[in-house]
Image (tube, rainbow, N blue to C red; front, top):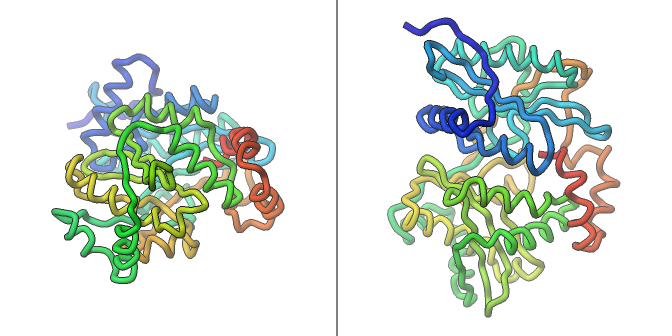
Length: 348
């Protein structure tokens, strides 16, 4: 019989972090984004305040809730689980523990005076204190036993694109080259009008998650055209930050990249599932992922207004940000890399 629930705050000692991660590793609801490494990253790279809560019963952790406080004049004051991550919220197998931690997060939000609390759940919740806002879906697909079976799971039209890419004399390498991944990714997001993260963030991901973080880069005649930084956890590969240069489209190197990542993850990392992450509903990325034969699974992000009077709308489609986006697309890449980190730290 489990004892009284005690809500505690995670400290920074190695033993505490290891204890937290051991729970996440063994909890079915625990995702890569619940790991304590994210606490270290958001505090060291972005200087945000992390509030990692957990419930302890009879000396055992029975639930965890990573929370990060963000505050800016432009984007408001928030408490999020977890920024820079597609999944979050409470990880626990016990409904009472989940509610306890959600209530603790709401109380913390009031103490901090935030505008709102955001919990990035994959599953639906029934806490009446929370309001659901579904604007994103996740995508994924099981990985076949070999390269041909992986290709066979892709929709016919997209399969033809991949076959075309295989004739373009492209090569790929898998390593820890986060600098190349960052350079390509930063150019790609600039073209979309989105501020890029600092290079220190990519380096921190590699240093923190070590062999769970890997880069695949596509080249032609030694020149890089596409690159993706991926995570590995619980039998899944999660391509997280990917992009291509101006010449990538003609070579179809992004399509080649994701296919080769699937094959590599299966053959060399023993992964059995490809998690293509989230996309905003009805966006271009949403349509692209569907073209691979992946069906959207709605995400159940939960919110609680604390001091704010409306749910946040940080979507690129928000007219409030259109001038900024259109201006950003015209910036030189070097300038977008210099200015972007000052804005992107609040857009996770």
